[in-house]
Image (tube, rainbow, N blue to C red):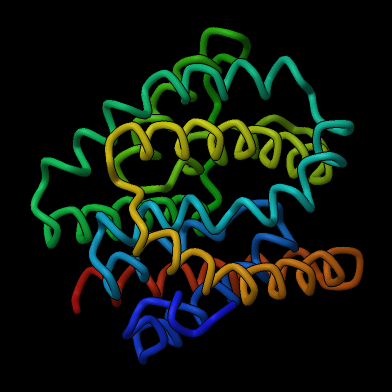
Length: 249
C-alpha cells in the first residue's frame, strides 16, 4: 500500500503500546474464547479515549471471530446463544448513547470499575445460583448489550451466567464465542449508525489486527496444552492490573 495513503502520525508510541495490549488480549481470547475486551476496553480507552478505544475494542475482534466462530457454533447450544445475543443487539444503541454522552475521563473510569468488579467476583469464586432458562437469558443479554454499547465489554453478565451452568468448559467456551459473534455484529452496526466509526478508527483497527490475530493463534495452540487453572489466574491478574491502571492513571 502506498505510504501516501497511510495517515501521518499513525505509527507512534501510542500505536505500539496498543499493539502490545491487543497481543496480550489475543492470547487470552484464543485460549479461553473470551476476555480480550476486558483488557482492550480500559487500556485502549486510556491510550486513545473511550470514543476511539471502545470502537477499536469491538472492531479488532473481527479477525478472531472468523477463526473461532465456525467451530464454536457447531459445538454451542444455539438456543442459549440466540437468547443472549438478540436482546444484547437490541439494547446496544442505549449503551452507545451513554458512551457519546458521558465525559471521556468519567467513561474511562467507569469501564475500569466494571471490569474490576468482574475480576473480584471471578476471583472469589462466586457463582450465579438463580433461575435459568429463556427469561434469565434474555435479561442477561439486555444488560450485556447495554454494557457493550457503552464500554465495548459485553462479557461480564454472560460470563457469570455461563460459568454457573455446570456445562463442560469446552461447551461454555463455545457458547460464549457464539454470543460474542452476535455481539460483534450488533456493535459494528450500532457504532456505524451512531457515527463512532471514522477513518482514524478504521486505520487504528487495521494496524492492531495483526498482533491481535497472532496472539489469538498462539492462545488457541495453548488451549489443549496449558493448565486452565493457572491460565485463569494469570488472566485475572492481567485484567485487574490493566483496569487499575486505567482507573488511576
